[in-house]
Image 1 (cartoon, rainbow, N blue to C red):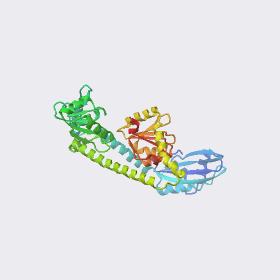
Image 2 (tube, rainbow, N blue to C red; image 1 turned 135 degrees about the vertical axis):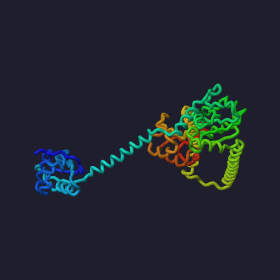
Image 3 (tube, rainbow, N blue to C red; image 1 turned 90 degrees about the vertical axis):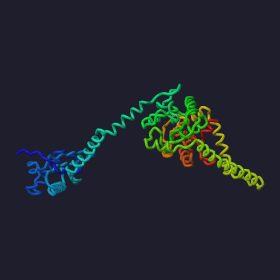
Image 4 (tube, rainbow, N blue to C red; image 1 turned 180 degrees about the horizontal axis):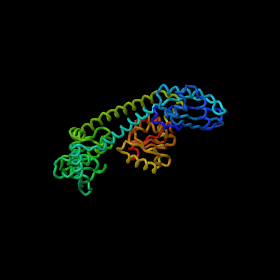
Length: 428
């Protein structure tokens, strides 16, 4: 009598076997049918179940290592839950396979319908995602896309420097100056046409001429690069108003709502200058008080009887002088390389990690610099757009970094063994 193929398996029994010896797959199959024969009665006889198609083809996968065989038995079943569990439990009664002792353990009974249901759910999610991404946009989206593309096509070039600008620069009495081409395109896309870009941090002559006869609003990114452009523009250009993108954002990535909000919040240049001077005055007063206090301390020290200085105190007092000498001993070639890299990083909030040959090992965001240094052992110097903090100096000291080069530093020379170099020292 021939076997009837399994119409649809509802459960799959996964059984692990461990045999103390070397056997073949036919030995395992023979043990399954031979040692379970007559155990469960005629209705659950494995041979009869397989002939009727309620038990599928039994698969055996074995592997032999160091004289022992292990593997898996896979038994598909279309019986109900209880009958499948009984058949699975009967397999654990097998004690010998071939001439060897064996241990048989049912690992799990898999419900095929649950697996299929999970597949259906995941596949349905993928299909729905494709449908949403490929669905036709509504009329409003089509109109906005066409309008924005037409506005971006209105980009023209202005002056001998061929600066990117909108079409209405000469016709408008009010203009907006931004940093680059991408900023101009974003403002054009959102309906602002009286805009022109400087194409970098250097201020072109065409911009200088425009500011003398227009009401000018300077619109910069919300980062340190934007602050530097404001500082340079206040010295060279006749600016009327200044506004910035939200902190950490660039003009080119702003939405229409953010652009209009920033432009509505512009500040008169006189207010900016007043705020700048007001912030410098307290610093000057604090510096004057600090100098006075230091002079008084020196006079008191001169009058006070001197005690012998310990070796530790001598080394601590000598450390700033040693570090200052180390800074002055930086080779000119290294100094120029540090300066060039720092200039490249201005406004990027990024960091270069260098080896002893001043080759760039990697570039990382400044926010991730401390974590990155903890995992490095061969860093020689770090150049980054930011401020050197005590935490960063401590981490760099532990990883044997020799130089930290940044825009500014909050670490005194006496607080670390590392040479902390700021931008002003490189320019000297």
